[in-house]
Image 1 (tube, rainbow, N blue to C red):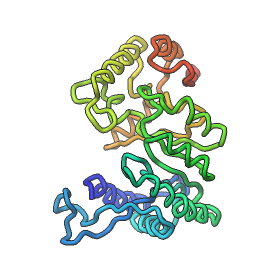
Image 2 (image 1 turned 120 degrees about the vertical axis):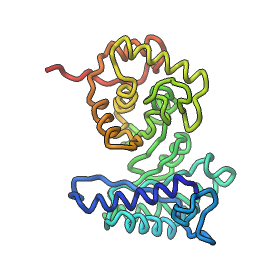
Image 3 (image 1 turned 90 degrees about the vertical axis):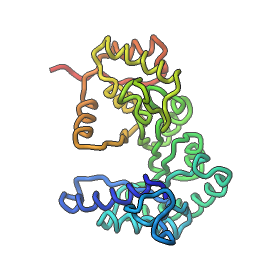
Length: 289
């Protein structure tokens, strides 16, 4: 079990404790399926500290595995229902040479289970979450999905989803949940030493491009993080951005960035300098009071 999986499990318990103190109807809860937490012989998973939960992750996209995964999530969250369920990590990065087998299993198992739960009203919507838009196109062609979570592929630094993936989602009415709008950090921190891009230190060309965007931000008095959050939200297919927050202060800062006024001239200059695609929709300026 990776340390991040152990943290995720603990965070779900904490979230569940918090949910019991608020009006459930005021929230939209999303969870994922595809990974089961299995007990480890000896009590400690490889690479995990002795204080972590003694479980390891096993991929399982079967019908029964999906039902068990969702049941476990409901138990940890302390609730009897969730709104959105995402089939996670059916891509080559995680599945390697097993990708075709996993895809078939997801469509014959997880998809069938979640479609039944949606029809019964147990869940409101379901989709797939990966960082590979090309496999999401396969899912869109083979099933009736409500939403897709795509990580890091429609940001200020990565427009690879714009030409093919986003138009199909828009035409099909599939909502896009754009995760990792900061591309693992560099669009929040700027091109400082050690800045991260897709879970690794950013390459020199990424840092150079980020510095060019930062220069435009400086000229127009726009925070880089505000531009990073608002850019994907301008696309009509995007329903929300999903970004990690480690503290209440970061959550508050993201709200401020989403509401910040950004002049149209800023986006025009980014396009003029070929820092964002000409075809990319950009936010309309907020009305002045």
